[in-house]
Structures are given as C-alpha cells and as structure tokens.
Image (cartoon, rainbow, N blue to C red; front, side, top):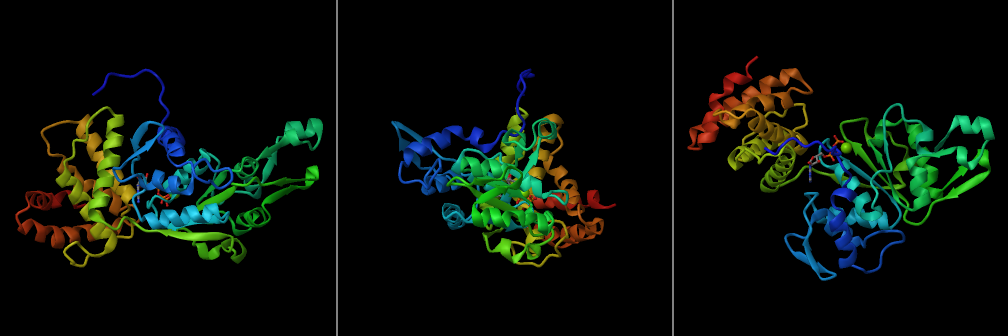
Length: 375
Ligand SMILES: Nc1ncnc2c1ncn2[C@@H]1O[C@H](COP(=O)(O)OP(=O)(O)OP(=O)(O)O)[C@@H](O)[C@H]1O
Ligand SMILES: [Mg+2]
C-alpha cells in the first residue's frame, strides 16, 4: 500500500477532466466537420465512448489508444450522437445500473467538454430548476434586473450552446417536466419579468435519463415524449465483456486504495455468472432460475467485486476471498425483498449444487458455504 497522502483529492472528477488527454487527442485526430459548438466530430465522440479497440490513433505526431468506457452496442451510441447532432432531445431509458447516467455524462463531456450542467429530477424539482430563479436580495435592492436572475443549468446550457443533462426525469411531476416542452420546441426561454427572450445557441440540447423501475415514461406527456428520441439501454449481453468490465472497474476502485485487485479471475467470473443467472432467470447451462425482485445490475456486480477487493486489501488473512461472495450476494438479493433469501438458497441447492458435482473446485467451495446464507 502507498504511504499516507496528505494532499486533498477530489472524489469523483468529471469525465472531461479524467479523460482530458484523450479528448484533446481526438480533437486533433479528426478535424472534420463538427456540428455547431461541438468540441469533437460525431465520429470522434463515438470513438471516445466505445474506445479505439486497441488501435493507436495518430494525431499531431503522437499516437494514443482510446479506452473503452461504455460497454455496449456501437450502433446505439451512434444513434445517440446522431440524435444530438440533429438537435433533438435524447432520452436514455433502462433498468437501474445499466450506465445511463454514465453514457449521458460521457456524451456531454465529449460534445461540450462540460458534463456539469445537470438537474437531478426528484419529486421536489420545481419549474424554476428548469428555467431560472432570482437572487432575492438583488431583486429587492434593484428590482428585476438581469444580474438578479439566477440561471438554471438548462438556461446556462442554452446560453453556451452546451448539453444539459436531466437525471431521472420521470421522478419530476409531469407539469414540471413540461417546462422543457417549450424550451425544446421554441429553443428559447422567455423571461417575462425582464421582458426578454433568451435564445438557445446552436449546440444546445438536452439528454435525459429515466429508470424503468420508477414511475414509467408512460406518464410523460405526449408533447414532451415527441421532443425526445428514446434509446433503451440493455444490460451487457456478453458474459466475457461483463466480466472484463467488472474486473476493470474493481481494479480502478481498489487501486485508489493503493493496492492491486486481490480477487482472481475465476472468482470474478463466478460472481458475474451468478449475477447474470439471477438477472436473466436462466443459467448459462439453460437451467431455469427464479429471479429475485432486486435488480442484479452490472453496477451492483462492480460494487460486490470492489468490496471483495477492498476486504482482501484491508483485512488480508489466509482466508480465501471467495468465502465472502455468498454474503455479499445475499445483501444484493435482499435489497428489495427480504424474502428473496429463499430464492438465493434455492439457486444454491439447484444450480450451484449441480456445478459443484462437476470438477470445478470453486463451485464446490461455494456450495460448501451455503450455511452462511441461512438466517
Ligand atoms: N454497459 C456498461 N458499460 C460500462 N459500465 C457499465 C455498464 N453497465 C454498468 N456499468 C457500470 O455501472 C455503473 C453505474 O452506472 P450508472 O449509474 O450510469 O447507471 P444508471 O443506468 O444511471 O443507473 P440508475 O438507473 O440507478 O441511475 C457505471 O459506473 C459502470 O461502472
Ligand atoms: Mg442514473
């Protein structure tokens, strides 16, 4: 482990900061036509998000391999980019933990070099969060005046020609969501108190995300739906790619604690296999499984793998780290419905038992840990 550091370190820097070098390189790599106010061409935006697949891209006398960030269908990312270039709103919908927020942040970082113009939708979000508010002391001192106006992230994005992000849009009341209808269709915002109109600069657009487990998109008004192109983000379809991603993210998280990831590949693959079996209701062998109510998302798999990695770092002992897996799984499975402990036990008694009868030592030892799942 590294020595204690004393300088302060920001916890979650935005992607435009983390990947500043990649963004600068891609801007030089493809100097083709860009939509107005875009920092990169549409092609470079897609490469930034899905990576250059190991290929070193040459620009300005340097080469650079662009890392894969979003694991998924390249065609989907291309459609998202086309939607935004066409100045239509983009709505990313999907189950929790499928990287909707991550994708919207990456798009904003690549296109505007700014992913910070964000509104978090909640039941308490008011129309002024989408429009503007007032600095009341200035308002009282000077009366309605441009300086007293406090712009929302959306208004700031309109002024700069940047992307604004609305997280969990369906959690806002429908009448509040509808503040976006006129912004997206007229591309200007009227400020009656100042008798003024704020026009959106070219490049302005909105990316929203919505979770299918929340109040559905069905409650969005037809007028608002029409102003967005919808893209559904599915969980990662391939076991190997999902395992790779979980390994990569867990490695990063454990590296922040100054240690290598002490969870071996077989354990990671078993972890991701269990997540996928329970998510899909069918095992890799084709045996059927009862799905728990909880979402067995990739994001949760990353959290479990990192916790196991951190446990191995902070509490090193001769205890095999795989022993921790059943209890972490139980924690995820029981999040939404405590009675789902039974479903995990049933999975242990059927699937894990059958795998333990083969010759894989790991499944045998996992099977022997069944007792740690009992109440
Ligand atoms: N397809 C994917 N590609 C890359 N990372 C992924 C993918 N799916 C899940 N992840 C991981 O899951 C994490 C969480 O993703 P994120 O918070 O963006 O999900 P979300 O869909 O917005 O979830 P929620 O609906 O709960 O807000 C990401 O930081 C990443 O580590
Ligand atoms: Mg999200």
